[in-house]
Image (cartoon, rainbow, N blue to C red):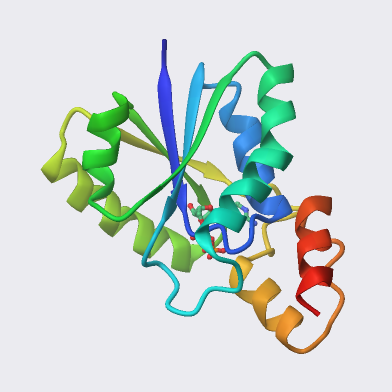
Length: 162
Ligand code: ADP
């Protein structure tokens, strides 16, 4: 049973995250999507809402692929979450050189704390590699259209914010 951990702030989950998640399904038998609690100081969506939107969107896809899915939130070291769930793989998406710089540094720190946990990077798919939650939040704040960037369950919640 290969357990993978995909951490992020997911505020909100985007088509870019979903692309990484679907590709992670080919690698793991059990995926733990972990929402970091302190990643964004003033989030667009509260943790519970983010968690529910991920479950709505990803649950059926995981079931269809026979992958066990857990969506959790955490406010501790990622390596401790990995230990708790017996995950030997941390999955991250890489969009840009900026992601690479940050991610390789974080990976090295994590590896020195937990040498038995490997981090793997999946390159963003070109069609969605430009999408970021931060930009989605900014577009929402300016009343713009985010339909191409987020799944339906998120669109519904965004229209409820107004
Ligand atoms: P963001 O950086 O957009 O706020 P998160 O912190 O939730 O998003 O990101 C969680 C993980 O998903 C990170 O590894 C990030 O690089 C990856 N990711 C986010 N958006 C995309 C995308 N469009 N394509 C590929 N990977 C992505």
